[in-house]
Image (cartoon, rainbow, N blue to C red; front, side, top):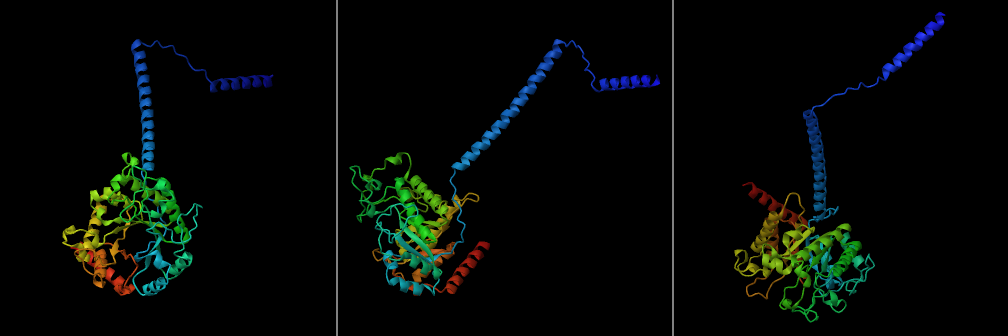
Length: 435
C-alpha cells in the first residue's frame, strides 16, 4: 500500500515540475489612452525613420566608394617596368653605319670611353625597317630592308661589350607608307597626299590602325633584344602647307590630346613587354604653349607616360635671344643649362604627390651648325661644355646627335674620368643647395 502511495506522490511531483518549466504567459488587458497610443505610434515612426536614414546613408557611402573606384579606373597610370635602369651616356648610330664596317671601328673606340649606349635606326627617316624583322603578332611588316644584314649578331655583340641598346623608330613621318596605305596619311581636301619641304609624307596621328602597326614593330624590337624603344617624330608636321590638311577628328579631340593618348597606348604595349620606352620631343615646347599645341606635344603629360623624355635641346635650334643669350649656338654650356633648368621647373610644377615622372635624358649637339649666320665650330670644348651643363642642372644622362654618326671619340672621357666629373658636379650642387 505504501508503495502505491509513494508512486502517486512521485508522479504528482514530476507533473507539477513539468508545468513549472513552461508556464503560460500571463495575459493583461490594458486599456491604453489615446495619448499613449499616439506616443507609441510616434516612437515607432521615429524608429522606422532613423532605420531608413541609416540604410540610405550606408547605400550612399557604398555608391560613393563605387564612384571613386570608377574614377580611379578612368585615370590612366603608367605601368611599372621591373628592370634595372642604366644611367645612359650614348650616341646616335645611323642604319647605314650599323650595317657597315664602320661599326667595327665605332665599337672598338667606344670600349675605353664613358659611352655605354647606342641609339640605332630601326625604322629610319625614309620609313624603312632596316632589317628583316619578324613580328610577334604575325602582322605584315612593310618596307623591310637588309640595310643591317645580321641584326641579331650586332645586338649580341653590343651586349657582350656591355652596351645598352636603344631602337629608334621614326613615327609619324613615313614617306614609304604613302603609296602602300594612303588612307593612313595626311591628306589635303582634294584627297591628295600632303608632302613636306623635303618631299616626305606624314601619317595622320588620328589613324589608330597605324598605332597598332607601330606598336607591333616596337614589340618586335623588344623581342629581338633591344633594351629600349625610342620614338622620334611623335608629333604633327608644322611645315608650310599644313593648313591644307584636313583633320575632321580635331573638332572632338585636340592635337595635344591625341598625341598624349597615342603615347599612353604605346606605353601600355611596351610595359606589357617589359621594355623601356622613350620619346624625342622638341626642346622649344618646354614652357611654350604655342609650340606645344602646334606639334601636339605636352611636355609634362608625356613625361607621365614614358620612362625617358629626350628633349632635343641643340643650341643651334634656339633663336637669337633665347634664355637671354644673344646667339645660343655660340654658348653651348649656358644654353643646355638654361634649357634643362626650364625642364626642371615645368616638371616640378606638374608633379603631384608620388605620381610618376620620366627621367630626362637630353639630346646634345654633336655637329657644327654652319648654316647659321652666327655659329661656332663644335669640338671637344663644346662637347664637354654641354655635358657639364647637363650635370650642373641636376640631370645625369645624355645622348649626342650627329646625322652621319661621325664622332671624334677623343672628346669623350674614360669611364673613370667621366664618373669623377659627374661626382664633382653632384657635390657642387649639394653644396649650393646647402647654402
